[in-house]
Amino acid sequence: MRLVECVPNFSEGRNRETIDAIAAAIAGVEGATLLDVDPGAGANRTVVTFVGDPEAALEAGFRAIRTAAERIDMRQHRGEHPRMGATDVFPFVPVAGVTMADCVALARRLGERVGKELGIPVYLYEHAATRPERRSLADVRAGEYEGLAAKLRDPAWKPDYGPAKFHARSGATVIGARKFLAAYNVNLNTAERRYAVRVAKRVRELGLPIRAIGWVIPEYRCAQVSMNLVDLDAAGLHDAFDACERIAGEMGLRVTGSELVGLVPERALLDAGRHYLRRMGRSPGAPHEELVETAIRTLGLCEVAAFDPEQRIIERRLLRADRLAALPLERFLARLGSVAPAPGGGSAAALAASCGAALAAMVAGLTGERKDAAPGLREEMGALAVAAQEAARSALRG
Image (cartoon, rainbow, N blue to C red):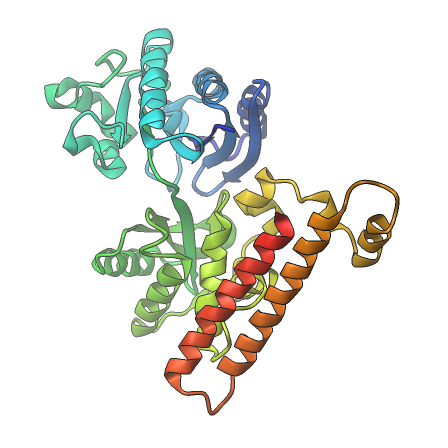
């Protein structure tokens, strides 16, 4: 299977008809699967997530950009989020059986088609960038829509595709290829933007792979530190949350919760759950559901809107649960004891292996949580418990 994820951002978060039309344009392409539509009225912006095979993703992307160009007039757009076009940014992200080079090629093909057929100026960014100064989205978008006409007159900012001419209705579009990015906002107990701006500045100064700005979302009645986490291995949700919490505390503020925009990989919540369990003196080798629940509660992901992990974790949206693994144990045993050829010995062995690994996780967790456990032993048992939980999950899912 070859899968590409696309996470286009459109400069419309209030007009439901326009948002639905863009979503329908994507869903109407065979081979493309619409996963999430996340509008924000305050930012006046909608983040859409869909996946598909490369050709389907390319076609769905073009249809979405065309629909946005037909329905969004940037001359009327007002919102908190930086933007320069109706389809503001369109990244391709490799998921399965696809390389970053493949995504770069897709970005260039889409950019060329948008420039030629729609007459919209297109800039390439991140891994698809044609020059170093265009790699950063923030640098490409500097000046935003209001400064775009002057920018296009500068030879240094000639678009990669399309005319070097101001398109008043649609602005410009930035298309690229990148790793997975988490859009993550931390809520403060104030509705004054200046405090969020100060916290965001301090977060940027930490040197982590986090892009941060401060804004106010009227519908939430609070200021937020709005962040893009561009490398979840180097700086996860918990790192961003803890940094904001510490910095806000030094300013006499409090963090009250947080918000994830769009979908997130499961590992981001698992890592956060393990981090907070360790902080409690608990074993990090807890079952995945407990880790996810710990992350949701500690990060306050339900403060401004409901957070359903079944809908917001990308793997759970992409992969259907195995029907045998989802069966209650009593029904599985009834099936196993029937004359049906499956499940058979392999499934029984997988269940036994999963049970054995789960028991190993339990023993390691109990040992590591003993009050008299030496620090080195606690860390060793924690690592063993995590490995055992992963083995149990792997065996069960085959």
